[in-house]
Length: 95
Image 1: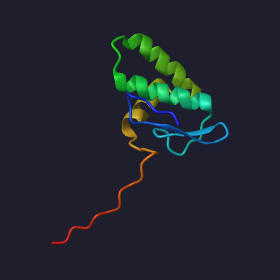
Image 2: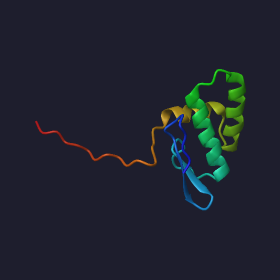
Image 3: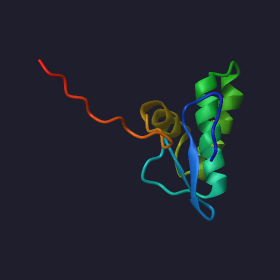
């Protein structure tokens, strides 16, 4: 499993060199791609002070995933899937 102190997103190995990443639901990645995805998520969460250098890095990493940098940052920010936690049961309130 890959985690980061900077983001709640995770990557989990599902067998061999196949990985799933929380901000890319429905996709199976290689280990190298999962590392790129986690680096994008961590970099996006930190809001680095040197945006030009970091943006170039995000663009290069996103290309490994078949995405643009903007697409990757957008997906990191909108996806809230946490692969390590289960969904709590629905609670009904009585009136």
